Length: 499
Image 1: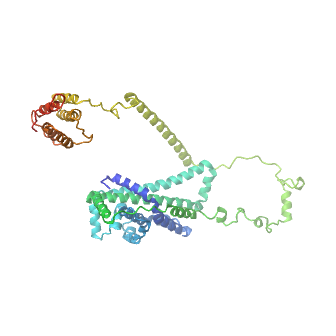
Image 2: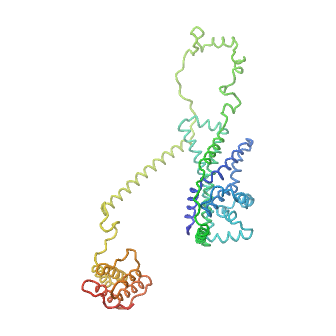
């Protein structure tokens, strides 16, 4: 947990959704499929209202998801049976308000955790909302809009994709869809329920991320949770390992419910006619019992000019067998042609854009390799900066040059680096690569000899680099003389600078 922007908090909710989706199957997806299956038993004239009923009951189905998130957030290693404790209270807490006067509130993804997890009363609830709004709780409005757009895009895209594929595979299937939409509507309802499970659980998780981020911004909740974890570890000792979610049974039940929603009757059975007799029974056509035909009817058929008669043998066939004709032509749909043409142009544009981008990035990569070479330069893994000069004398000469140019910060930095290099080369004091100024000073004081000049150098550099305070006049010359006295022939007792 840490402070995040609103979009980062929503993205953290997406990670929560990916992490806990397997737990949503038995507590959220399974009850939703059972409710959807029950709504299919409504009379046909009010069956379209099942879509509105499921949509209106979103606050009810959001509560199991939020309950699981709350348990896993406070008890990351909680077993599966822990989810059943307190689930009923989470389902009923503030339910009527969410189903009635708060049903159209756009802040519902971010405000629902306050009512369900914190359970404040009346005025305290409004006060909590006002407090957390200062931490970015209003960003949940965008989450509501995003969820609605995702549902519309998914359902519309699935419907248009099915129609387009039907038109591309067999043109006569499209008219079959329109003529028998009442029997095929169950597939649309199943797609709606599947999108409901995906999008609604994602919306709740993103709203939970916004809620957590608001508490972190306003109350510093990340520090509270951290200290609470320390206290629990000290009080209870080792925490048991995390139990894995039972993915197998939940997935099996999910698949069985999807198969249960498929249509159980064919078109012929739904129309009231027995299978294999779409145009009526034998008795309806010939007027006799099944398996029997009047001789007069058979004789009349055989005397017809369309047949060859009995003399041609047992094979009764047409005299003039027509050639294989063209398939039945259906009237073209202008909007379907426009959709196909738009998809074709869109795919071509994406392909050309991808090829152009690949060529452009290959050109940039080749230009960079030509400028820097295929291998990095020695002493520099990135090849962006020139390596520093080797040896303390070169560093001190560069420090003197920077000082004459008026670049005080660079001059003191090179002077300090030269002193460290001189201690390592001439005095045998190893300095760690990530050592701070005061750690270097402690190592230099532990070595034999007078380190007063290095003390003044460190204090002058620290006051300039971190405090913005200019050293006294003549301090740089004294420090430079001290650094050069550390080399061969020097005694390390150069003039001491006064910071």
